[in-house]
Length: 176
Image 1 (tube, one colour):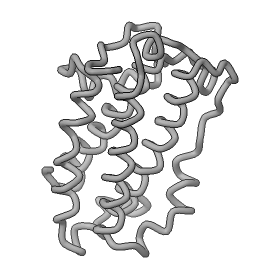
Image 2: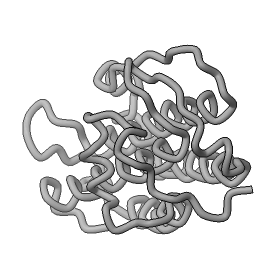
Image 3: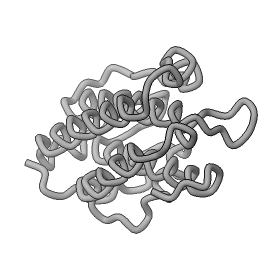
């Protein structure tokens, strides 16, 4: 089973995902990248209630909403990874992350609850990824009309998380 996940080649992910791939450009192992991000979730859980409620501009997500979004997006991406890795060729749809945030009630939850959920989601993502063999990791499927490989999805999950860690630093003044 997977001990290392090699970087995907250019045709294994969508143009849209290039930013997420760039966010983890120095990573050569998708599994290790996912593992290395786990302590950042712990650091996120230590923010004050004021930091957790902060929005860097009107209409932007609070830190708690971003944290809930990270859980939701990782679940969606991991589900896609599962379907692709298992060889399911059914085209998978996109999702509206803004609608998910509105429906999440994240601002009514504690940051501790949100980060505990995110940590649990990451544990299950890593377990899924570790269960895959080399053949499953290079399988491709269609997601939101783009071809994606299972290994690309592992990197996209890590890249999406890192993208938001970067936004926390740049726009929220939070260094994890």
